[in-house]
Amino acid sequence: MTVTLKDITDREERYTASTYKRFPLLIKRGKGAKCYDENDKEYIDLTSGIGVNVFGFSDEKMIADVTEQLNLLTHTSNLFYTEPQIRAAELITQKANMKKVFFCNSGAEANEAAIKTARKYGHDNFGPEKHEIITLKNSFHGRTMATITATGQEQYHKDFMPFLDGIKYVDASDLQMLKENIGENTVAIMLELIQGEGGVIPIDKSYVKEVEEICKERDILLIIDEVQTGAGRCGAFLCSHIYGLNPDIVTMAKGIGGGLPVGACLFAERTANVLGYGDHGTTFGGSPPVSASVESVLKRLDHKLYEEVKNKGDYIKSFLKQHDETVADVSGLGLMVGFRAKNKSSSEVVKKGIEMGVLALTAKDKVRLLPPLNISIEEIDKGLEILLKACE
Ligand SMILES: Cc1ncc(COP(=O)(O)O)c(C=O)c1O
Image (cartoon, rainbow, N blue to C red):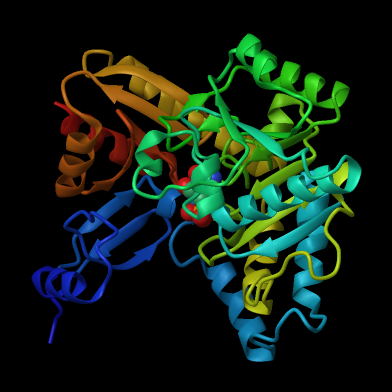
């Protein structure tokens, strides 16, 4: 019997916690930048599962590499050594130009690891008072207690008090406000370079360079959250590389697993040896099959692909800008693009787009596009043409 959308929505409502307001679409299968519903209707995917499937749905190379690993060894635990985790660690630290990595299972967990590391850095070097972390207003760092505290948005805060102590929020790009909030107990500054969930808002490069300078001068850690901007998304392995930064901690997730759940907290010189035995851990982090997916994806992230990402990003932006009768403004870097429709809200555009055969995301009042990095120009054209019609 074929499953219907109605049947699935009824069962979802009955059996799963009501945390997601889903669109009325049942995705049955996908390949590359296309997926299909239960009636085999085709959709162009400009979301890649919120910036995860860097090589699209059901990427053959990743399936082959992970399957090979599954046949060899599935889960062990972090009580033992496994080769795939160490290979993935070598690759990710080399590509990120960092010293060490802690593997976990999501972006929020990567940020939890970063927050814990910053706190321990303060304790070890200055004492427990040095524990304050400054983040930006309108940021998004995850949904765990520590990471919603770090997230500078009221909408995620209500109903969950009390929060972690010692987190302060400042306006993005306001250097004066930042300086006024830095005190002798400030241990870290944490920020996204492009606020993704916040509306695809790039943070000013010269501001971030000044922040880096202040961090160096005052022995404060710079933590860059690259959960959404990393893994080639902006046209480099890390967006930090485009900004010319050398952060003390970088967090990654989403794209590095190409579709399997993984997070990574990367440490530079100053933080490489802060965490010791027993300070942090996770059952699943860096498991063999997930590490095989990281290796499979990361081996294929190279300069040729980054050039393609930049070109396709520029192509999308100029396509949208040419339609200024429908599009109010365009923002973003590489294949992380946001735009505002003139006459419709972002959620109206996304909803209409799905009806018409294209998947896009919202980020506040922007329509957000995070297509697979290997999407073709033909698929981009088709997806954007449908989206523009959805804006009318
Ligand atoms: C910048 C940023 N940090 C952290 C997270 C949280 O990641 P996850 O949903 O994997 O916990 C997200 C998710 O969208 C994100 O965009």
